[in-house]
Image (tube, one colour):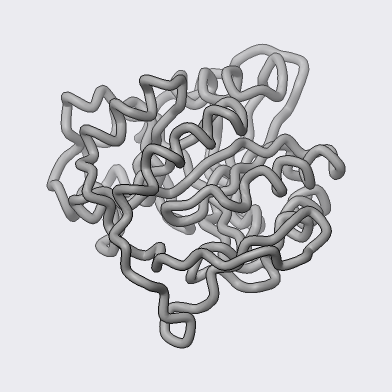
Length: 260
């Protein structure tokens, strides 16, 4: 059993996938340009997406603009790896706030040069699919910021945080910390595709008190929208979306099956 799924009355049915990587992420395919991501999202019926590259936002503004052209709302975001080795999805109401956060976070990334032959290229791409640069530091590293410091910093500038794929051994909150720290005051947690809410709560009963969401964690175009959240909202906006998330109004939908 999870949270009772309350319907938030509103005129819009919205489907959102808030965990998508671009070609900037070392593990992201080079096909994941901002324009291709936005077009793929539109083609499968997504209304809102977030670009969440590892420890970087260099492709955010181009993806936001690509989303405007395609009629898809793109939320600026980033998947941060904290000092504990935990992945946390960070979201921002606009590009200016996102840029401010990134400028504060980047100095905490170890200054270790990327080895493209080993980790892959970390490509910065413009709205027209032109490669305009490469991220020189390897992005698959932990910042020297604790999860407490990260959460406090993001919230202080009006952002939202959701720990990513919390049950996964790789970078999940639960395997690394053993619990959801009460002092973080978290209400929303992401579970990994293709796990169902019921499966995760069976293994972690304490999660029944949280709003559990799921997204694609797409690194290839074919994976965009393989897991998403569907809900009713008054408008397609940052504040309305996270209000729905906190209140447990959404349900996880998969491309070939749905979990209510």
